[in-house]
Image 1 (cartoon, rainbow, N blue to C red):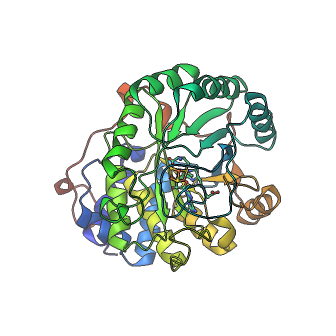
Image 2: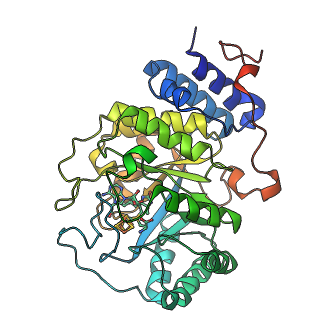
Length: 366
Ligand code: SAM
Ligand code: DTB
Ligand code: SF4
C-alpha cells in the first residue's frame, strides 16, 4: 500500500518508539497533503498513531462552566458573548466562588476529570483576580484538573494562576493567521501567541485549538494545525470546535462545514500532535453518532460533558452515556487515565525533531 509521502512519514514518526517522536517543523504543504489525503489512508494513519500513543477506547471528559457571561469587549465574529453583536444574551457578573465550587463538585460526581472555567473577557481585571484564584484553589483541592479561559494574560497573572494550581489554560488560535482577520479585528494573531507563550513559560499546560466552519479553506485548516504543532511544545489539549452558528453574529449564515472535512482535521491533528488530547468540542449537538464515532476513530479522545457549553447546548450525560455504550467507549478516570505526556516535567517534554529525510516514502525509517 502506498501512502502519500508526508502521510507515510507522519505515520512512521507518530508510531515510532511508542510515538515518542514529536515534530515541530511541519510545513504548510505537508499539512495540506495530510488533510487532503484519500480518506481511508488518512484514517488508517491517524488511528494507527492514536493506538500507538493512547488507549483507543478511552475518552477524557471535561466540564465547562461560564463563570462570567456576555458583554465581552472583543468582536469575535462567531461569539454569542461579544458586546459588538446583538445576540439577545444578557451579560452577567463574575459568579461567586462558592457557586463555582458547587458546580465543580457536581461535575466530579458525574465523572469529569477536568473543570474548565470560562469568562467573557478580553483580559481579566486586577479586581477579578482574587476570586479567580480562589476558584482555581478550590477546584484543585477537590482533586479535579483545573482549566481556565479568561482572554489575554500578563506576566503577573500567569504566575499567580500557576501558584494557585492552574493545570491548563485554554486560549485558541481559532483559525489560520490568514483567515483570522476576517473573523476577529480587536486583537491580533500575535496577541494570541504571546499569551500562549506566557502560559507555557509559567509552566501551565497549554490548551489551544480552533473552530471549523468559519468560511475557511482546507489550506487554512492545515495552516492552523501547523501553527499549533510547531509551537515549542505541542499543546497538552487541542480543542476542535465546529461553529455553532449564533443568530445576530456576523457568521450566523456561514455554510456549515462538511462533516468529512471536520473528521479530516481531527485526523490531521492526531497525526501532527500524537501525544496531545484532541477534544471533540463545540458542535456535537449537530453531529450524528456516526460522525462522532468517526472523530473518535480519527483520534479525538476528549469531549465536553454535560448539557451546556458556555452559552449553548451540549448533548448531556444521558446522550453521552448511550453513545459511549454503543461505541464501547469508557470515560477516563484520574486512576485509569493514560500517562499524560503534557504533565511530564518540562525537561522531559518536546522529544527530538526528526527531519523528514530520515523516512522513506513508504513510512519506514530510511
Ligand atoms: N474569552 C475567552 C477567549 O476568547 O479566549 C474565553 C472564552 S471563548 C468563548 C473560548 C473559545 O470558544 C473561543 O476561542 C472559540 O474557539 C470557542 N467558541 C466560542 N463561540 C463559539 C461558537 N459559536 N462555536 C464554536 N466555538 C465557539
Ligand atoms: C473551546 O475550545 N471550546 C469551549 C472552551 N474552549 C471554552 C467553548 C465552546 C463555546 C461554544 C459556544 C458557547 O457555548 O457559547
Ligand atoms: Fe469575548 Fe472570548 Fe467571545 Fe471573543 S470568544 S467575544 S474573547 S468571550
